[in-house]
Length: 356
Image (cartoon, rainbow, N blue to C red; front, side):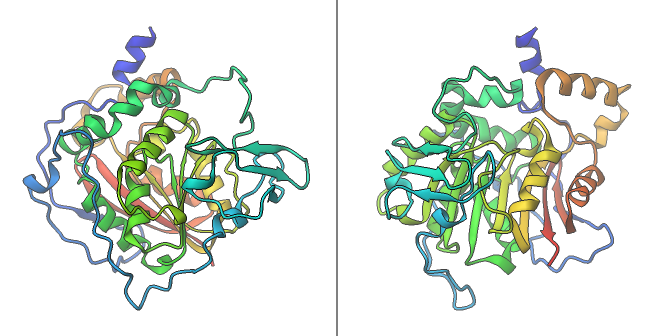
């Protein structure tokens, strides 16, 4: 039964008969001013299957129009207790980065809950540091396995380009930048970062004051740490790896400039709980940008599709979206405005802003 659930789960994409199409903009009572190439060629959309996925990004000094916050220790200052959301105090007066998490200790000033980091990441989950035995839905648990964590940038993520229309990391990064232009230079959280493909790109771009690679999977964070250690001259001082639950983010309210969630929303046990938390931690004017996929088009003619999807969601604990409007309503319900989205086949990238 479990094996069958995994086979039909939405995070294992199936071949699609649709043709590669132009990027189109979805209008929901707004007029987008983003400048995005109207067409992606077939060769651009396909990704190499060579391990691991190519994520090299040229490190270019930010333009004069992007003001970078020089406060290196900013990440430490925005952390909050995942239990009571009280402020966290570090045992040592030192910055928090990729290189400093091993043995790093934080304590909540309100409930006195303590958190300790490992070599690869800082665990800020409620059950961090203990073997609680709690399990998450299949769509979450599968990414905690060593095998899937190892394969994620060694073929798994590349399949999204061929089967679902994801444009690949470099093109996706360009789209992300267009969406979050108003908050470039600030902090960004790469939520459900997986093995850190975009977290590393964000850190190397020089466009953000601080980057948090956040995931619930310990093995994904270890993979991210391993990739970082393989890179020369990586800007470790502006990136930190944190284990956290998307429905209980360990950050102060209104403290973050941008949140990115790549190919992740459909795997969250409760997308509404995740987006609500993202809305809470975003500063007024902060931007949420995410990519996922939508099963519409020819799938709309499948008999009883919605009933079948509801069954899959109950078994796997994941969400399959059937239209852009579902995503817009999700963002609106969580207090976000100015919804925008881009489509290419089943791939969709969306953005929404916290009201100023």
